[in-house]
Amino acid sequence: MQFKALLVSETADKQFVPQVVTRELDELPAGEVLIRVSYSSLNYKDALSASGNRGVTRNYPHTPGIDAAGVVEQSSSSAFTPGDEVIVTGYDLGMNTAGGFAQYIRVPAAWLVRRPTGLSLRESMLLGTAGLTAALCVAKPEQNGLAKSADPLLVTGATGGVGSIAVALLSKLGYTVAAATGKAEQADFLRQLGAQQIVSRQELQDGSDKPMLKERWGGAVDTVGGDILFNVVKSLRYGASVACCGLTAGIGFNASVLPFILRGVNLLGVDSVELPLAVKAAMWDKLAGPWKLDNLDELASEISLEALPEAIQQMLAAKVAGRFLLNLA
Image (tube, rainbow, N blue to C red):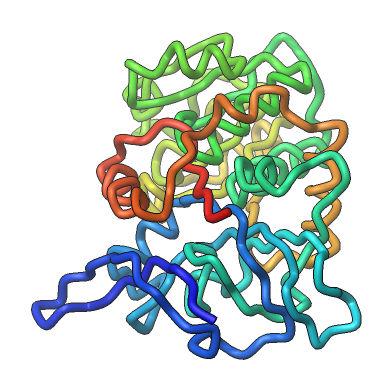
């Protein structure tokens, strides 16, 4: 059987070219479950894979796509039968295993979460890895005592995939949200998601040379890393936490122990890739139930497989606000 897929190939002059091609099912990797993909979504990691980043994908030609939602076509696992609706995020999907930017994928059964009641396949990919990560970035601080107070919660990189969903989710849960961005023109977009305060990226970069900054935030979700992350740490209220999940501003920062021993703050790492499947399923249940967002469609633009290469270039050029939903149905 033939199907369409985005295939990224390396040319003789070491350029990486994404093209929509026709593939055969027997070209897919081994796996217990064959899935007809209905929807996927575009993440920054996908854009890196599509541009030849060897830290994400080692071998080419390759089909990126770390997210997929669809219907089981074939299964050698007793856990799934044809017709089951499932979600796949993370693990090796789209990194070194052919990913969700295709009409079919074949994966291990241990990567699959059943679509939770209350969330359609389309809605699951409006969220995707970004939504799952945002939910984890809320759940982990709540487990460490995050409480509603007069102090706003800060979200950095707020126009990105994780950031925009984090803004919407925190607002839904009743927190006062401050959204930090380098895209001043997207202030109205962030306010529509529930942000009550807009903070410039430059404002968060100031003070990197100081060991402590004025207490300002009741908690934070950081999607960018670098010195911005540690400036946030230095600005947390006593006992507050920041969940860290991104690195677009860098993997290192100028740090000291002072915020930790003088204010008792917490730096909480968040990973959504190798997370145990039971934890992923629990987060999806929250996103389909008490944490379900009313404004999901405001978070994403729907595109076709043919429009995906242009969307990838926009993401690499940092010209994207919100999410791209890939419709493969």
